[in-house]
Amino acid sequence: MPTLLRIKVEEHPHQLEWKNSQVPFICDGCKELGFGLCYQCPNKGCNFILHEECGIRRPPTFLPFLNTCNFQFHKKNPLEGTRVCDGCALDIRGFLYQCSSRPDPHDLHPSCANLPSAFSLS
Image (cartoon, rainbow, N blue to C red; front, side, top):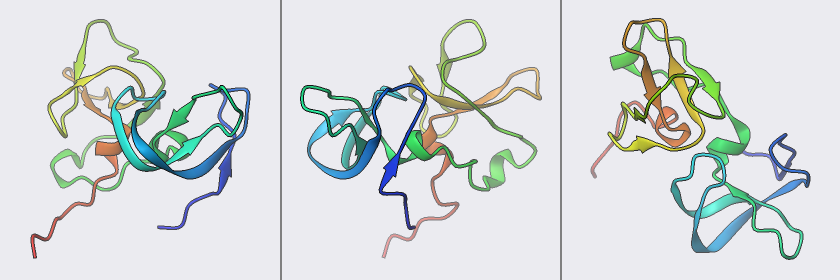
């Protein structure tokens, strides 16, 4: 999928550039481990870095098991307590998508919210 080469996000004062990180990183948005392509601050001494999904913030792709949800992006959990991603079952520590139209809201990491609806193991 084509992506933007530069973006500006309100969480950081500098423009971010699309790069291939040579080392694993912790995303400053979702606080999850990342590898490879990312948005990174080009300023020396500034280590701000985001996954593509945390920088672009596309609406979640169609998820058949959550088809009645209207997910909204949040920089932090708007509810009290810890949240667990319904996609990967790991704790959510930063950016998230949440559907609060049910008594028990659904939550997704930005990277889990944009996974393909089917995988091929060929």
